Image: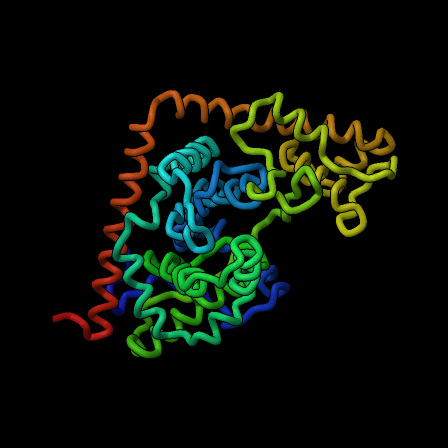
Length: 372
């Protein structure tokens, strides 16, 4: 497993402009996919999840499936279970050890291989979190407050808890920069709505290089790999989310899966067509069905045609049940092996992440002339 670059030996940066629109990011993603296919070893990906509950269908289609794909292509994947981020907007983190185990079961069952991908927890890598301090000196409070995701999360926290945001939430984009840059990640799979966060990481990398490593840049400016899947809607027609109670967990039973799609929202039009703007609920079912049948939403819509929403639900339900059967079988097998195996997987990933983070922090201290 390669470690982080030494001073004046940066990881391979991905070329590109400093600021990109969503359209430009999508165009760049098409280029990156070709580059990845030809030379996957040039790329190191950092991605992850907050452990607030077991993963659901939206995670699989939106992120987890893509991570497995990148791993299998030969890209080095770092997967962070961001336990510190759970307390950014809530007082009670719940039973974190149990939740982390559930997330880890979902990762492994979906195909993430701990021998090829590094899975680790935020709180277990002290050197990573120490990078937050010098990185905070490279941004202004105004830049943090302008971040659209921070603004949205702050509004949501105020509605839930009737209080202002925590300092941890305000500095979340900088913490995310530390997550990415500690391992010299140069590629980050994101949705379009997360581009401002990644732009903050690119800004921090650039400013650090300008201030402390102008002769030979140390940190790469990571590129965005736009997620190939659209947002998955829940049974109520809103974005699938554990907190909304509208999600189908990957660990759900087949009976629960059938019941879930039976209550999924549709519309009154008899003929099934793929029109995401006009018919979002129907389009969502078509996208889910297409994912598991290996076809396109348009083709699936033509196949169902005038048979209506009832037939569409049946087709999608059968596809999801069959598609998730191997994953669920692997998950049960892993769960039956007991917590020791999961603990070993996480200990191995934490050890890898710590070795890299220690080296990076040591390099940063050297570049900042803070070695005594």
